[in-house]
Length: 275
Ligand code: C2E
Ligand code: MG
Ligand code: MG
Ligand code: MG
Image 1 (tube, rainbow, N blue to C red):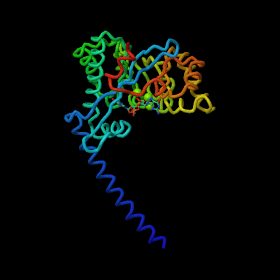
Image 2 (cartoon, protein in one colour; image 1 turned 120 degrees about the vertical axis):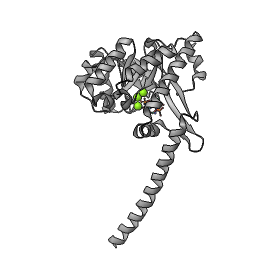
Image 3 (cartoon, rainbow, N blue to C red; image 1 turned 180 degrees about the vertical axis):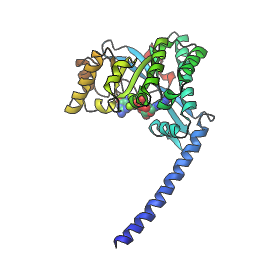
Image 4 (tube, helix red, strand yellow; image 1 turned 60 degrees about the vertical axis):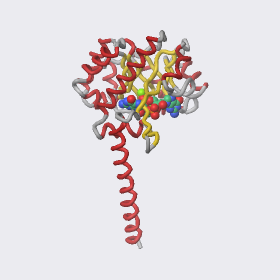
């Protein structure tokens, strides 16, 4: 009987695995076409200062709507793009589009602080990354002081020396650097003081339970205190409620980002926020 069940399970798994691989292949080939089909676009989410309530910047977030498959989450297609070697092209496209948007806002007389762009580990590991950023800034005309790059802990740990040299060059150009999803990756805290980083973004999984979850309150407080002790600004992501705002304000968190203030939106919808 056990044997029988086992065979059934085996049959079941192979079938679903096959379906899964077919779905994956479809997704891969669709992603290959996404850039040419104009199927990618950016939305922007404001970041605000807790102290002043002013907008201090926007994070550019990538969206993909495939004509057949519909809209697919970046949590799914970014890792896929990394896996199939498309992240360089996509990442460069995102950076260029975000810089162009910044220039468009400037031309409209709107001041937006900084535009933040997410950078994948593989982009950062390329020796040409700094040059690519410099080239895009130069070609689009966006001042480096209007750009922020968000990198994760894990993408810095693969080759800390090389990455910290590159980040230092970007910092010298005037680009601001943030550690995204802080607290969820594997990183050695000793790197925090060595890396030329300006900000920590508390991961939204820690913001979620504030102020009732005792673990998350402890973690959020500790990140804010440590960040400030290291002269870093601390940003909370995923802020959804007034209670979270109150807790984070009381604990001197610097900036906020989340649905409480605004969903990520197409640039055209954000002129109100900017004026
Ligand atoms: P992330 O960089 O940590 O971005 C924050 C994510 O939280 C975004 O999800 C955003 O829409 C979502 N979010 C913002 N406010 C709230 C809130 O109040 N509550 C909740 N529950 N979520 C909120 P999104 O846009 O789905 O992006 C997911 C991840 O995909 C990003 O996380 C980032 O790691 C990656 N990603 C997105 N765009 C790009 C890109 O252009 N390049 C790279 N390399 N990665 C990207
Ligand atoms: Mg981010
Ligand atoms: Mg984040
Ligand atoms: Mg996150």
